[in-house]
Image 1 (cartoon, rainbow, N blue to C red):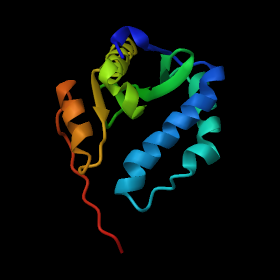
Image 2 (image 1 turned 45 degrees about the horizontal axis):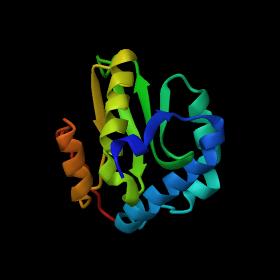
Image 3 (image 1 turned 30 degrees about the vertical axis):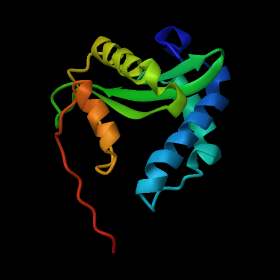
Image 4 (image 1 turned 60 degrees about the horizontal axis):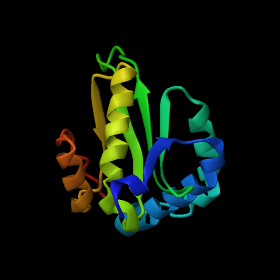
Length: 158
């Protein structure tokens, strides 16, 4: 599959079922295998409502990877204005997933590129993303795309 076989574009309402399926893939592959507290059914139970709200929110970006009219990946991000605590506008890459069969088409890098351009255009001066520390592939991907470590979350089960 080549780069030309996939299109990265803004999501539309008719993409919601594909967005839910993409989100379900992310939950099953990532959080579901790395965090026992994650409800892997969340995308099927709440994803449609969440994506519909995001599509209407000007502070959110929802992108899809389209292959022949089928959603094979997604990215969702948000932007916040400066506050008294955080003195610069900031954008967060909330979630991103590309089906394994489509990862060699550089769809992930294209999603991140679109997100960065959107964030800059929305006034963000910095962007951030979180990844499970055990997800070394995701960490390497984000580092290749210019992200670097900033915070470390430590967790203890009670």
